[in-house]
Length: 250
Image (tube, rainbow, N blue to C red; front, side, top):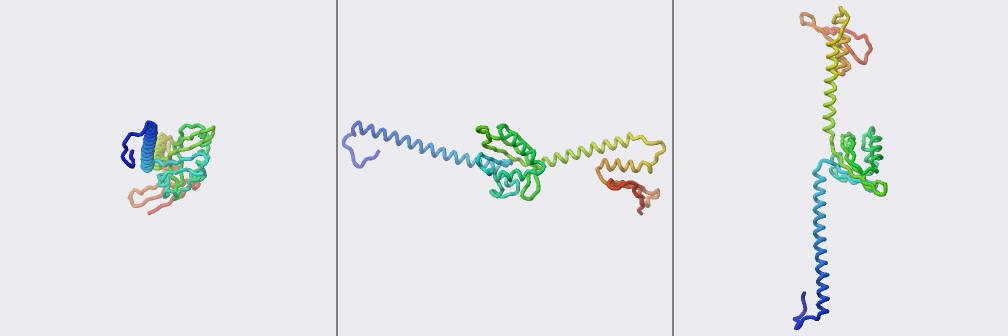
C-alpha cells in the first residue's frame, strides 16, 4: 500500500477493514490472472504439441461435426494425396467421390451402420490422389452420438499402399506356385493310350504349360540330330481355334 504523505496515526478500524477487503480482492484478481496466464501457456503448449504430433505421425486425420458441410483435414493427409496444405476439397461429398467407384457402396453402407454405434470401426479403401491414381488407405474411425443422432466423426487414414501391393504380389506368387505344382503333378500322373508318341502328346503338353504359366501362347520346337536346324512342331494359342500350324525355321 502506498500513500501520498506520512501518517501520524493508524486508520480507524472501519478503514482497515475496507483496506483488508480490498487487499483480498486484489489478491484474488492476481491469482486469477496468474492462473489464466498459466492456462493460456498450457493451451499454447498443447496446441503446439498436437500440431507436432499430427505432422509427425504417418496417419492423416479427418474430423466432422454436426452442422459442418466440410471436413477438417490434417496437412499430413493432404500431403499423402499429393496436395499442398489447405488445397484439398474438404466437402463431405468430395470424400465419397475420392473413394474408388467399386468401393463407394460398401463404404456408405458401413457409415450408415456405424453412425449410431459409437464403436471404433475400420475399412481398407482405394482413394484417388491428385495425380489421378488410387492408393490403398486404412480408415479407422468412430462416431460420437448425441440425442440419437451423429454429432461428431473423427478418423485416421493410414497409407498402406506398399504393404497391400506387397501382400497381393506374395499371394499371386503363392497362387502361381500352387498352380504350377498342380500341373507338374498332372504331367507326372497322366496315363496315355499305349503307343502314344511325343507328336501325339504335344498339344496336351503345351496346354498344360499354358495353364501353369497363365500365358496365351506356347510353342514346341525340336532340333534335328545334327543340331543345325530347329523345327516348330506345335503352337498352342489360347485365342485361336485348333488345329495349329507347324512351320520350320532354320
